[in-house]
Length: 70
Image (tube, rainbow, N blue to C red):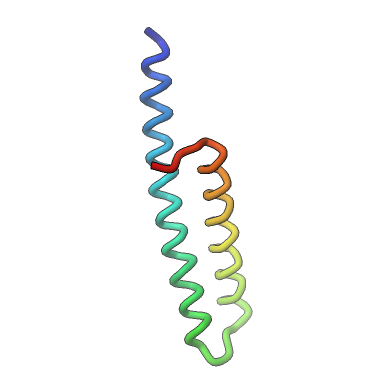
């Protein structure tokens, strides 16, 4: 009786994690293309790229740990 809710919540949060993973990947790729197109990127832009990359890899690691991939 109580475990049905647990499965539903796990599925809901897994779906949310997967959508956040897609958003983080798009942001990382956007930042990466911006760096590639710029002649002399500033330190702020390079830092934003590193943050986006780190966030994506963190979410990817968490998704692998939870076995979220559909």
